[in-house]
Length: 507
Ligand SMILES: [Zn+2]
Image (tube, rainbow, N blue to C red):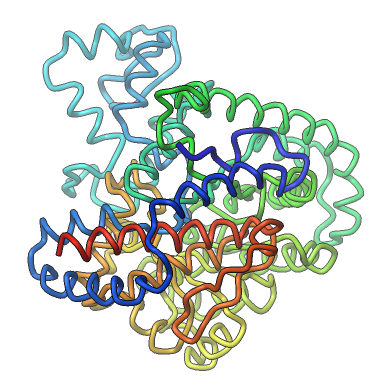
Protein backbone atom coordinates (compact mmCIF):
# COMPACT_ATOMS: atom_id res chain seq x y z
CA UNK A 1 0.00 0.00 0.00
CA UNK A 2 0.98 3.60 -0.44
CA UNK A 3 3.47 4.95 2.05
CA UNK A 4 2.23 8.03 3.88
CA UNK A 5 3.77 11.44 3.43
CA UNK A 6 4.29 11.44 7.16
CA UNK A 7 5.68 8.02 7.85
CA UNK A 8 9.10 9.38 8.70
CA UNK A 9 10.28 12.53 10.44
CA UNK A 10 10.94 15.11 7.78
CA UNK A 11 13.75 17.57 7.58
CA UNK A 12 11.80 19.30 4.84
CA UNK A 13 8.40 18.79 3.23
CA UNK A 14 9.67 16.99 0.15
CA UNK A 15 11.70 14.40 2.01
CA UNK A 16 9.18 11.71 1.13
CA UNK A 17 8.55 12.74 -2.43
CA UNK A 18 9.97 9.48 -3.70
CA UNK A 19 7.42 7.42 -1.77
CA UNK A 20 4.56 9.49 -3.11
CA UNK A 21 5.84 9.34 -6.66
CA UNK A 22 6.03 5.59 -6.31
CA UNK A 23 2.43 5.66 -5.12
CA UNK A 24 1.43 7.75 -8.12
CA UNK A 25 3.09 5.25 -10.41
CA UNK A 26 1.15 2.41 -8.79
CA UNK A 27 -2.09 4.34 -9.15
CA UNK A 28 -1.28 5.29 -12.73
CA UNK A 29 -0.98 1.64 -13.66
CA UNK A 30 -4.45 1.02 -12.26
CA UNK A 31 -5.99 4.15 -13.78
CA UNK A 32 -7.17 4.47 -17.38
CA UNK A 33 -5.42 6.86 -19.76
CA UNK A 34 -6.42 10.52 -19.72
CA UNK A 35 -8.32 10.26 -23.03
CA UNK A 36 -10.86 8.00 -21.36
CA UNK A 37 -11.29 10.19 -18.29
CA UNK A 38 -13.84 12.65 -19.67
CA UNK A 39 -16.32 10.06 -20.89
CA UNK A 40 -15.89 8.07 -17.67
CA UNK A 41 -16.66 11.21 -15.69
CA UNK A 42 -19.80 11.81 -17.72
CA UNK A 43 -20.89 8.21 -17.23
CA UNK A 44 -20.20 8.45 -13.50
CA UNK A 45 -22.24 11.63 -13.35
CA UNK A 46 -25.18 9.90 -15.09
CA UNK A 47 -24.91 7.02 -12.64
CA UNK A 48 -24.96 9.47 -9.74
CA UNK A 49 -28.10 11.15 -11.09
CA UNK A 50 -29.82 7.77 -11.42
CA UNK A 51 -29.12 6.78 -7.81
CA UNK A 52 -29.50 10.23 -6.21
CA UNK A 53 -32.95 9.28 -4.88
CA UNK A 54 -31.78 5.92 -3.54
CA UNK A 55 -30.00 6.68 -0.23
CA UNK A 56 -28.29 3.30 0.36
CA UNK A 57 -26.83 3.18 -3.17
CA UNK A 58 -25.90 6.85 -2.94
CA UNK A 59 -24.19 6.20 0.39
CA UNK A 60 -22.14 3.34 -1.09
CA UNK A 61 -21.22 5.53 -4.08
CA UNK A 62 -20.08 8.40 -1.85
CA UNK A 63 -18.11 6.15 0.48
CA UNK A 64 -16.15 4.77 -2.48
CA UNK A 65 -15.62 8.21 -4.03
CA UNK A 66 -12.24 9.92 -3.47
CA UNK A 67 -12.84 12.82 -1.09
CA UNK A 68 -9.46 14.55 -1.08
CA UNK A 69 -9.08 15.71 2.48
CA UNK A 70 -10.66 16.62 5.78
CA UNK A 71 -9.33 20.07 6.63
CA UNK A 72 -11.30 20.70 9.81
CA UNK A 73 -11.06 18.00 12.43
CA UNK A 74 -9.99 18.00 16.07
CA UNK A 75 -8.01 14.93 17.06
CA UNK A 76 -9.69 14.34 20.43
CA UNK A 77 -13.18 14.90 18.94
CA UNK A 78 -12.47 12.51 16.07
CA UNK A 79 -12.16 9.49 18.36
CA UNK A 80 -15.17 7.28 19.02
CA UNK A 81 -16.21 6.67 22.64
CA UNK A 82 -15.59 2.94 22.30
CA UNK A 83 -11.86 3.64 21.91
CA UNK A 84 -11.72 5.89 24.96
CA UNK A 85 -13.54 3.25 27.02
CA UNK A 86 -11.13 0.57 25.79
CA UNK A 87 -8.09 2.64 26.77
CA UNK A 88 -9.69 3.44 30.13
CA UNK A 89 -10.27 -0.24 30.83
CA UNK A 90 -6.80 -1.30 29.70
CA UNK A 91 -5.09 1.54 31.53
CA UNK A 92 -6.65 1.06 34.95
CA UNK A 93 -8.74 4.24 34.81
CA UNK A 94 -12.09 4.69 36.56
CA UNK A 95 -15.61 5.43 35.38
CA UNK A 96 -17.72 7.86 37.35
CA UNK A 97 -21.04 6.02 37.43
CA UNK A 98 -22.87 9.17 38.56
CA UNK A 99 -21.65 11.60 35.86
CA UNK A 100 -20.64 8.98 33.26
CA UNK A 101 -17.18 10.44 32.86
CA UNK A 102 -13.78 8.74 32.66
CA UNK A 103 -11.67 9.60 35.70
CA UNK A 104 -8.23 9.02 37.15
CA UNK A 105 -7.63 6.53 39.97
CA UNK A 106 -8.03 5.89 42.83
CA UNK A 107 -11.37 4.31 41.96
CA UNK A 108 -13.40 4.86 45.14
CA UNK A 109 -17.00 5.87 45.85
CA UNK A 110 -18.79 6.66 42.60
CA UNK A 111 -15.54 5.97 40.74
CA UNK A 112 -15.38 2.31 39.72
CA UNK A 113 -12.52 0.47 37.96
CA UNK A 114 -13.40 0.85 34.26
CA UNK A 115 -12.72 -2.72 33.15
CA UNK A 116 -14.78 -4.37 35.92
CA UNK A 117 -17.58 -1.79 35.79
CA UNK A 118 -18.04 -2.16 32.03
CA UNK A 119 -18.10 -5.95 32.34
CA UNK A 120 -20.45 -6.12 35.31
CA UNK A 121 -22.83 -3.15 35.22
CA UNK A 122 -25.84 -3.57 32.92
CA UNK A 123 -26.40 -0.54 30.71
CA UNK A 124 -23.22 1.24 31.77
CA UNK A 125 -21.46 0.93 28.41
CA UNK A 126 -24.43 2.45 26.60
CA UNK A 127 -24.79 5.24 29.15
CA UNK A 128 -21.07 6.01 28.85
CA UNK A 129 -21.14 6.12 25.05
CA UNK A 130 -24.13 8.48 25.16
CA UNK A 131 -22.33 10.66 27.69
CA UNK A 132 -19.08 10.78 25.68
CA UNK A 133 -20.82 11.64 22.40
CA UNK A 134 -23.99 13.03 20.81
CA UNK A 135 -25.46 9.55 20.38
CA UNK A 136 -29.14 9.47 21.34
CA UNK A 137 -28.93 13.00 22.72
CA UNK A 138 -32.35 14.07 23.98
CA UNK A 139 -32.75 17.35 25.86
CA UNK A 140 -33.69 16.84 29.51
CA UNK A 141 -34.06 19.42 32.31
CA UNK A 142 -30.54 18.62 33.52
CA UNK A 143 -28.97 18.27 30.04
CA UNK A 144 -31.04 20.66 27.97
CA UNK A 145 -28.66 21.98 25.34
CA UNK A 146 -27.01 20.20 22.41
CA UNK A 147 -24.36 22.93 22.49
CA UNK A 148 -23.52 22.25 26.13
CA UNK A 149 -23.70 18.47 25.82
CA UNK A 150 -21.41 18.55 22.77
CA UNK A 151 -18.70 20.66 24.40
CA UNK A 152 -18.96 18.90 27.77
CA UNK A 153 -18.11 15.51 26.21
CA UNK A 154 -14.48 16.60 25.85
CA UNK A 155 -14.08 17.00 29.61
CA UNK A 156 -15.57 13.54 30.17
CA UNK A 157 -13.07 11.64 27.98
CA UNK A 158 -9.89 13.73 28.05
CA UNK A 159 -8.33 11.66 30.87
CA UNK A 160 -8.29 8.67 28.50
CA UNK A 161 -6.30 10.57 25.84
CA UNK A 162 -3.10 10.54 27.88
CA UNK A 163 -0.49 8.35 26.22
CA UNK A 164 -2.75 7.51 23.28
CA UNK A 165 -2.06 10.21 20.67
CA UNK A 166 -0.51 7.65 18.32
CA UNK A 167 -3.51 5.34 18.72
CA UNK A 168 -5.81 8.29 18.02
CA UNK A 169 -3.90 9.21 14.87
CA UNK A 170 -4.08 5.59 13.75
CA UNK A 171 -7.86 5.50 14.26
CA UNK A 172 -8.37 8.67 12.23
CA UNK A 173 -5.98 7.64 9.44
CA UNK A 174 -7.44 4.16 9.12
CA UNK A 175 -10.98 5.54 8.95
CA UNK A 176 -9.95 8.14 6.38
CA UNK A 177 -8.38 5.52 4.13
CA UNK A 178 -11.44 3.27 4.41
CA UNK A 179 -13.61 6.07 3.06
CA UNK A 180 -11.09 7.10 0.38
CA UNK A 181 -9.84 10.32 1.94
CA UNK A 182 -6.24 11.05 0.96
CA UNK A 183 -5.28 13.79 3.41
CA UNK A 184 -5.97 14.87 7.00
CA UNK A 185 -5.17 18.28 8.43
CA UNK A 186 -5.61 17.58 12.14
CA UNK A 187 -5.94 20.13 14.92
CA UNK A 188 -3.50 18.72 17.44
CA UNK A 189 -0.22 19.83 18.92
CA UNK A 190 1.81 18.81 21.93
CA UNK A 191 2.68 20.87 25.01
CA UNK A 192 -0.42 23.05 24.77
CA UNK A 193 -0.80 23.27 28.56
CA UNK A 194 2.89 24.01 29.06
CA UNK A 195 2.65 26.86 26.55
CA UNK A 196 -0.27 28.35 28.49
CA UNK A 197 1.66 28.00 31.74
CA UNK A 198 4.63 29.77 30.17
CA UNK A 199 2.39 32.75 29.43
CA UNK A 200 0.78 32.76 32.85
CA UNK A 201 4.18 32.70 34.57
CA UNK A 202 4.83 36.24 33.36
CA UNK A 203 2.93 39.51 33.78
CA UNK A 204 0.64 40.43 30.85
CA UNK A 205 1.48 43.78 29.31
CA UNK A 206 -2.04 44.77 28.31
CA UNK A 207 -1.50 44.87 24.58
CA UNK A 208 2.18 45.48 23.96
CA UNK A 209 2.63 42.36 21.84
CA UNK A 210 6.33 42.93 21.19
CA UNK A 211 7.00 43.07 24.93
CA UNK A 212 4.87 39.98 25.52
CA UNK A 213 6.71 38.08 22.81
CA UNK A 214 10.06 39.05 24.29
CA UNK A 215 8.85 37.82 27.68
CA UNK A 216 7.92 34.32 26.49
CA UNK A 217 10.49 33.81 23.75
CA UNK A 218 13.14 32.35 26.05
CA UNK A 219 10.82 29.50 27.01
CA UNK A 220 9.96 28.44 23.46
CA UNK A 221 13.06 26.41 22.41
CA UNK A 222 12.55 23.88 25.22
CA UNK A 223 8.89 23.49 24.29
CA UNK A 224 9.77 23.03 20.60
CA UNK A 225 12.30 20.31 21.39
CA UNK A 226 9.72 18.47 23.50
CA UNK A 227 7.10 18.94 20.79
CA UNK A 228 9.30 17.35 18.16
CA UNK A 229 9.96 14.40 20.43
CA UNK A 230 6.27 14.00 21.31
CA UNK A 231 5.27 14.16 17.64
CA UNK A 232 7.94 11.65 16.62
CA UNK A 233 6.72 9.27 19.32
CA UNK A 234 3.05 9.71 18.41
CA UNK A 235 3.72 9.07 14.71
CA UNK A 236 5.92 6.06 15.51
CA UNK A 237 3.08 4.61 17.60
CA UNK A 238 0.61 5.35 14.79
CA UNK A 239 2.79 3.46 12.30
CA UNK A 240 3.12 0.58 14.76
CA UNK A 241 -0.66 0.35 15.24
CA UNK A 242 -1.23 0.53 11.47
CA UNK A 243 1.59 -1.99 10.80
CA UNK A 244 3.07 0.42 8.22
CA UNK A 245 5.79 -1.11 6.12
CA UNK A 246 4.63 -4.66 6.80
CA UNK A 247 2.86 -7.11 4.50
CA UNK A 248 -0.52 -6.44 6.13
CA UNK A 249 -0.18 -2.66 6.48
CA UNK A 250 -3.44 -0.83 7.15
CA UNK A 251 -4.43 1.43 4.21
CA UNK A 252 -4.30 4.28 6.74
CA UNK A 253 -0.52 4.22 6.25
CA UNK A 254 -1.18 5.87 2.87
CA UNK A 255 -3.04 8.87 4.30
CA UNK A 256 -0.97 12.06 4.36
CA UNK A 257 -1.20 13.88 7.68
CA UNK A 258 -0.36 17.41 8.72
CA UNK A 259 -1.23 19.29 11.91
CA UNK A 260 -2.52 22.69 12.95
CA UNK A 261 -1.46 24.34 16.19
CA UNK A 262 -4.07 26.45 17.97
CA UNK A 263 -4.85 28.63 20.93
CA UNK A 264 -7.68 28.13 23.41
CA UNK A 265 -9.68 31.33 23.26
CA UNK A 266 -11.33 30.85 26.64
CA UNK A 267 -8.03 31.22 28.54
CA UNK A 268 -6.64 34.49 29.95
CA UNK A 269 -4.83 36.73 27.42
CA UNK A 270 -1.36 35.91 28.76
CA UNK A 271 -1.95 32.18 28.19
CA UNK A 272 -3.55 32.72 24.77
CA UNK A 273 -0.67 34.90 23.62
CA UNK A 274 1.96 32.37 24.70
CA UNK A 275 0.07 29.58 22.90
CA UNK A 276 0.01 31.75 19.78
CA UNK A 277 3.74 32.52 20.02
CA UNK A 278 4.44 28.82 20.50
CA UNK A 279 2.10 27.79 17.68
CA UNK A 280 3.82 30.14 15.24
CA UNK A 281 7.25 28.93 16.37
CA UNK A 282 6.16 25.30 15.96
CA UNK A 283 4.90 25.82 12.40
CA UNK A 284 8.15 27.55 11.50
CA UNK A 285 10.29 24.84 13.12
CA UNK A 286 8.57 21.60 12.06
CA UNK A 287 7.07 21.12 8.56
CA UNK A 288 4.54 18.62 9.90
CA UNK A 289 2.76 21.60 11.47
CA UNK A 290 1.28 23.70 8.68
CA UNK A 291 -1.02 26.29 10.22
CA UNK A 292 -2.48 27.95 13.28
CA UNK A 293 -6.11 27.99 14.44
CA UNK A 294 -8.26 29.27 17.32
CA UNK A 295 -10.54 26.85 19.16
CA UNK A 296 -13.05 26.50 22.04
CA UNK A 297 -16.63 27.84 22.10
CA UNK A 298 -16.80 31.21 20.34
CA UNK A 299 -19.78 32.20 22.50
CA UNK A 300 -17.88 31.77 25.77
CA UNK A 301 -17.87 35.07 27.72
CA UNK A 302 -14.05 35.31 27.69
CA UNK A 303 -13.93 34.40 23.99
CA UNK A 304 -16.49 37.12 23.20
CA UNK A 305 -14.77 39.70 25.40
CA UNK A 306 -11.32 39.03 23.90
CA UNK A 307 -12.30 38.34 20.28
CA UNK A 308 -10.86 41.60 18.94
CA UNK A 309 -7.73 41.20 21.05
CA UNK A 310 -7.18 37.70 19.66
CA UNK A 311 -7.56 38.94 16.07
CA UNK A 312 -5.06 41.74 16.69
CA UNK A 313 -2.61 39.26 18.20
CA UNK A 314 -2.96 37.12 15.07
CA UNK A 315 -2.30 40.23 12.96
CA UNK A 316 0.87 40.91 14.97
CA UNK A 317 2.26 37.47 14.18
CA UNK A 318 0.87 37.41 10.64
CA UNK A 319 2.73 40.63 9.82
CA UNK A 320 6.02 39.07 10.94
CA UNK A 321 5.37 35.63 9.39
CA UNK A 322 2.89 35.90 6.51
CA UNK A 323 3.96 32.45 5.29
CA UNK A 324 2.39 30.76 8.35
CA UNK A 325 -1.10 29.70 7.29
CA UNK A 326 -4.19 30.65 9.27
CA UNK A 327 -7.54 28.91 9.48
CA UNK A 328 -9.79 30.44 12.11
CA UNK A 329 -13.02 29.22 13.67
CA UNK A 330 -15.27 32.26 13.15
CA UNK A 331 -19.00 32.84 13.00
CA UNK A 332 -19.91 29.61 14.83
CA UNK A 333 -22.72 31.59 16.41
CA UNK A 334 -26.45 32.19 16.13
CA UNK A 335 -28.87 34.85 17.27
CA UNK A 336 -30.03 34.04 20.78
CA UNK A 337 -26.90 32.12 21.68
CA UNK A 338 -25.27 35.56 21.79
CA UNK A 339 -26.61 39.14 21.43
CA UNK A 340 -26.93 40.48 17.84
CA UNK A 341 -23.87 42.67 18.29
CA UNK A 342 -21.63 39.60 18.59
CA UNK A 343 -22.79 38.43 15.16
CA UNK A 344 -21.79 41.53 13.26
CA UNK A 345 -18.08 41.21 12.54
CA UNK A 346 -16.33 38.03 13.69
CA UNK A 347 -15.85 36.59 10.19
CA UNK A 348 -14.82 39.99 8.84
CA UNK A 349 -12.26 40.47 11.61
CA UNK A 350 -10.86 36.98 11.02
CA UNK A 351 -10.41 37.78 7.32
CA UNK A 352 -9.44 41.44 7.42
CA UNK A 353 -7.64 41.85 10.76
CA UNK A 354 -6.12 38.43 11.38
CA UNK A 355 -5.53 37.51 7.73
CA UNK A 356 -7.28 34.12 7.78
CA UNK A 357 -7.05 32.09 4.57
CA UNK A 358 -9.77 29.72 5.72
CA UNK A 359 -12.78 30.14 7.99
CA UNK A 360 -14.12 27.32 10.13
CA UNK A 361 -17.95 27.22 10.14
CA UNK A 362 -18.88 30.80 9.13
CA UNK A 363 -22.49 30.04 10.03
CA UNK A 364 -23.56 33.58 10.96
CA UNK A 365 -22.44 35.22 7.69
CA UNK A 366 -25.93 36.62 7.00
CA UNK A 367 -25.84 38.50 10.32
CA UNK A 368 -22.51 40.19 9.54
CA UNK A 369 -22.54 43.86 8.59
CA UNK A 370 -22.57 44.11 4.78
CA UNK A 371 -22.59 40.36 4.14
CA UNK A 372 -22.58 40.86 0.36
CA UNK A 373 -19.44 42.94 0.58
CA UNK A 374 -17.75 40.43 2.84
CA UNK A 375 -18.73 37.51 0.60
CA UNK A 376 -17.33 39.34 -2.43
CA UNK A 377 -14.09 40.00 -0.58
CA UNK A 378 -13.81 36.35 0.50
CA UNK A 379 -14.44 35.17 -3.07
CA UNK A 380 -11.87 37.61 -4.43
CA UNK A 381 -9.24 36.54 -1.88
CA UNK A 382 -10.15 32.83 -2.18
CA UNK A 383 -10.89 32.57 1.53
CA UNK A 384 -12.26 29.05 1.88
CA UNK A 385 -15.04 28.13 4.30
CA UNK A 386 -14.92 24.75 6.04
CA UNK A 387 -18.50 23.47 6.21
CA UNK A 388 -19.28 21.21 9.19
CA UNK A 389 -22.99 20.63 8.75
CA UNK A 390 -23.66 17.95 11.37
CA UNK A 391 -21.70 19.89 13.97
CA UNK A 392 -23.70 23.01 13.13
CA UNK A 393 -26.98 21.13 13.55
CA UNK A 394 -25.92 19.64 16.88
CA UNK A 395 -24.26 22.68 18.44
CA UNK A 396 -26.19 25.56 16.91
CA UNK A 397 -29.41 23.96 15.70
CA UNK A 398 -28.71 25.36 12.22
CA UNK A 399 -29.78 22.91 9.51
CA UNK A 400 -30.61 23.32 5.84
CA UNK A 401 -32.34 25.40 4.53
CA UNK A 402 -31.17 27.86 7.22
CA UNK A 403 -27.53 26.85 6.70
CA UNK A 404 -25.52 29.38 4.63
CA UNK A 405 -23.77 26.84 2.34
CA UNK A 406 -25.80 28.02 -0.71
CA UNK A 407 -25.23 31.67 0.23
CA UNK A 408 -21.46 31.19 0.11
CA UNK A 409 -21.70 29.09 -3.02
CA UNK A 410 -23.73 31.65 -4.94
CA UNK A 411 -21.12 34.28 -4.05
CA UNK A 412 -18.29 32.14 -5.42
CA UNK A 413 -16.63 31.58 -2.03
CA UNK A 414 -14.58 28.34 -2.13
CA UNK A 415 -16.01 25.62 0.14
CA UNK A 416 -14.89 22.30 1.58
CA UNK A 417 -16.81 19.68 3.56
CA UNK A 418 -15.29 18.54 6.84
CA UNK A 419 -16.22 16.65 9.99
CA UNK A 420 -15.21 18.88 12.95
CA UNK A 421 -15.60 16.11 15.58
CA UNK A 422 -16.56 12.85 13.91
CA UNK A 423 -16.22 10.80 17.09
CA UNK A 424 -18.39 13.09 19.21
CA UNK A 425 -20.95 13.39 16.39
CA UNK A 426 -20.54 9.70 15.45
CA UNK A 427 -20.27 10.50 11.76
CA UNK A 428 -17.58 10.35 9.10
CA UNK A 429 -16.69 12.46 6.08
CA UNK A 430 -18.86 10.32 3.78
CA UNK A 431 -21.80 11.16 6.02
CA UNK A 432 -21.14 14.86 5.51
CA UNK A 433 -20.97 14.43 1.73
CA UNK A 434 -24.23 12.48 1.76
CA UNK A 435 -25.86 15.07 4.00
CA UNK A 436 -24.69 17.85 1.66
CA UNK A 437 -26.20 16.06 -1.34
CA UNK A 438 -29.49 15.65 0.47
CA UNK A 439 -29.51 19.20 1.87
CA UNK A 440 -28.50 21.08 -1.25
CA UNK A 441 -29.18 18.69 -4.14
CA UNK A 442 -25.53 18.58 -5.14
CA UNK A 443 -24.52 16.51 -8.17
CA UNK A 444 -21.40 14.54 -8.93
CA UNK A 445 -19.38 17.43 -10.45
CA UNK A 446 -20.17 19.50 -7.32
CA UNK A 447 -18.81 16.75 -5.05
CA UNK A 448 -15.73 16.38 -7.21
CA UNK A 449 -15.08 20.12 -6.97
CA UNK A 450 -15.46 19.98 -3.17
CA UNK A 451 -12.99 17.09 -2.97
CA UNK A 452 -10.49 18.96 -5.17
CA UNK A 453 -10.90 22.06 -3.00
CA UNK A 454 -9.90 19.98 0.02
CA UNK A 455 -6.41 19.67 -1.45
CA UNK A 456 -6.06 23.06 -3.13
CA UNK A 457 -7.23 24.90 0.04
CA UNK A 458 -5.04 22.73 2.26
CA UNK A 459 -1.92 24.10 3.88
CA UNK A 460 0.29 21.47 2.23
CA UNK A 461 3.61 22.97 1.18
CA UNK A 462 4.33 23.89 -2.40
CA UNK A 463 2.54 25.38 -5.37
CA UNK A 464 -0.70 23.90 -6.74
CA UNK A 465 -0.99 22.36 -10.17
CA UNK A 466 -2.34 24.54 -12.99
CA UNK A 467 -5.95 23.73 -13.88
CA UNK A 468 -7.91 23.65 -17.12
CA UNK A 469 -11.23 25.42 -17.77
CA UNK A 470 -13.18 22.62 -16.05
CA UNK A 471 -11.12 22.94 -12.87
CA UNK A 472 -9.17 19.72 -13.49
CA UNK A 473 -5.50 19.89 -12.52
CA UNK A 474 -3.04 19.38 -15.38
CA UNK A 475 -0.12 16.97 -15.14
CA UNK A 476 3.18 18.69 -14.41
CA UNK A 477 5.78 16.08 -13.39
CA UNK A 478 8.40 18.66 -12.46
CA UNK A 479 6.02 20.47 -10.10
CA UNK A 480 4.64 17.19 -8.73
CA UNK A 481 8.21 16.19 -7.85
CA UNK A 482 8.81 19.26 -5.72
CA UNK A 483 5.41 20.29 -4.31
CA UNK A 484 3.54 18.32 -1.63
CA UNK A 485 0.30 19.98 -2.68
CA UNK A 486 0.78 19.12 -6.34
CA UNK A 487 1.61 15.53 -5.38
CA UNK A 488 -1.62 15.15 -3.44
CA UNK A 489 -3.62 16.88 -6.18
CA UNK A 490 -2.31 14.45 -8.75
CA UNK A 491 -2.83 11.49 -6.44
CA UNK A 492 -6.47 12.60 -6.10
CA UNK A 493 -6.88 12.96 -9.89
CA UNK A 494 -5.58 9.45 -10.46
CA UNK A 495 -7.89 8.15 -7.73
CA UNK A 496 -10.80 9.86 -9.50
CA UNK A 497 -9.83 8.27 -12.82
CA UNK A 498 -9.75 4.82 -11.24
CA UNK A 499 -13.04 5.44 -9.39
CA UNK A 500 -14.80 6.77 -12.50
CA UNK A 501 -13.54 3.96 -14.71
CA UNK A 502 -14.95 1.45 -12.22
CA UNK A 503 -18.20 3.38 -11.67
CA UNK A 504 -18.72 3.81 -15.41
CA UNK A 505 -18.27 0.09 -16.07
CA UNK A 506 -20.50 -0.85 -13.12
CA UNK A 507 -23.17 1.75 -13.88
ZN1 LIG B 1 -13.90 22.91 14.96
